[in-house]
Amino acid sequence: MIRAFLGEERSLPAGVVLGPGDDATTLDGGWVLSTDLAVEDVHFRRGWLSDREIGYRATAASLSDLAAMAAEPIGVLVSLAAPRGARVDVAAVQQGVTEAAASVGAQVIGGDLSRSPGPLFLDVVVLGRTEQAISRAGARVGDELWVSGTLGTGAAALLAWEEGGRPSEPLRRRFARPTPRIGLARALATAGVPTAMLDLSDGLAGDAGHLAAASGVGLVIVDDSIPVDEEVLALLGRAGALGAALHGGEDYELLFTAPAGAVEGLGSVVDGVPLTRIGRVVAPRARDDGTYDDDAPPLVLREGADGTTRPVGRGGFDHWSV
Image (cartoon, rainbow, N blue to C red; front, side, top):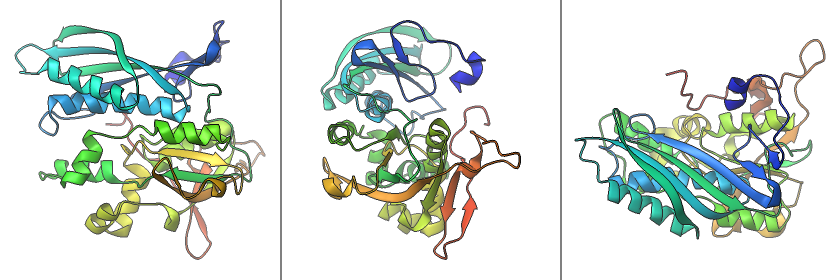
């Protein structure tokens, strides 16, 4: 989205290795930077979460971008603005930020505090380092497509709240306190496994589309292989749970590609997190004139049990469509 606002391609400043279009920016020396906004009534509602959980969730979501690049977290900077009279416990929000940072071995190293004329919001900047950043652009035809953990919990929790109910405690906890997959990403990178990687914040279909477009490839995703959460499956049924996984977002798991057979050598569980092969990388689909559409939903396909394929729209959350 940022690249669209910037217009035509421009050369990067000296010292910048990777600019807009990935989960984070990388600089000379292995430094990795990312930033995320968390805005009340867009990313969360204060009736759903405590102030401490709001700080934790915003920081964990930003740290997940470092996991996507296989970076080791170093520091967090947070700018927070709260409306006067809204009874926001700013200290509790900051405690949540500090707790999330400490959970991955990072520290809060700065930030800013202001009064807001509107809702509560946080801007969380994360700083990390890596020997070799893993971008979205390295997937190759013949690679396998893998995902960590289980999917659909974030979307199921949101659905419960939006329908006037309350999610179960496990679903609520997964939404309020997502786990940045830092240890898993570092273990995969140390083993030299991922060729491309990102975190799942916008839904499997949407983020797989981002990876496919960045790498200039196509993807086939086998729907029966997608690891939907068992509670979500019981609540929504197979079709509903699959929709939550594909289009719901808020999972903060890792999606990555790897050479055929590379992951099996590590086992089915890495750093305590299960890994599931869900598809493969194929050649991109060509237009009638022989050129490739780098942003087309048909880059991501879902394969039925009978072996047929059909295009899957990216879906997921879009700030500009609501």
